[in-house]
Length: 261
Image (cartoon, rainbow, N blue to C red; front, side, top):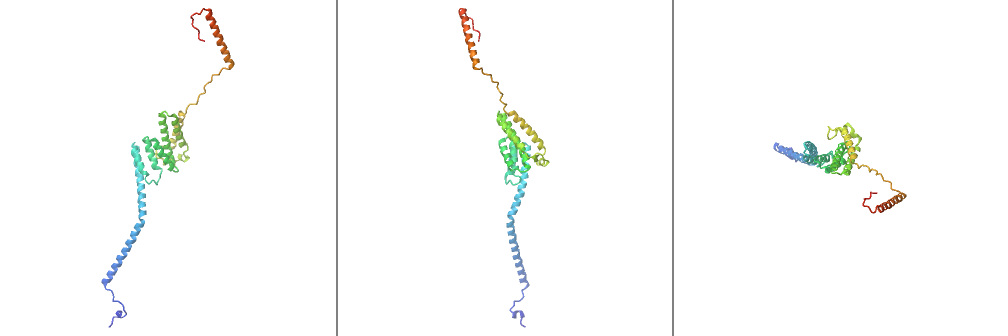
């Protein structure tokens, strides 16, 4: 008999080996497609992955640098504290006021007062909300010390100016800085912010008052004699001179000394 499949123009059935080969080829093709998809997904998500790693790394570095800066400051290693604080300035996205604040505080500890002032003023410009409270306190303290330095150099006028600037910084402090929440955010929780502010203001007022130039004392003006009084004095002087000349003539030109007029 003639094979019906052959008569119908069909192909004979594939052997088991052919079927296994076809299945393996299909599997390989599917795996290649999956690998391509995974590769493109990895390429597409690479920026997000890098951003996430950078985010985590920045947060960890911030805490590390902040801890090192505080530890060095407590140990009076102000140079080390400044170096660690400057490490916070790179990609300073989170709480941007803290990096210049920590640098300024370290500079103040090293008695680099003008540089400390510049950094703390930079921090104050970046601070928002209750962040300004602790920045204002430290800035006022730096200005007070600059006034003390000017006073030690004999510049009373310059000292009074620094004290006045520091007093302005404290008096313009928001009322919210007296709250418990502000105290919790203080850079020194052991320092009562409200009490520190009041003590600072009292000191500044006293120092500024001490450096103010004393009021000009009104000098008593001696009354100027009138024209009539001057003429009368001149007449007396002339009369006295004449009488003295007469006495000297009567005494025959004695050698006695004249009494002072």
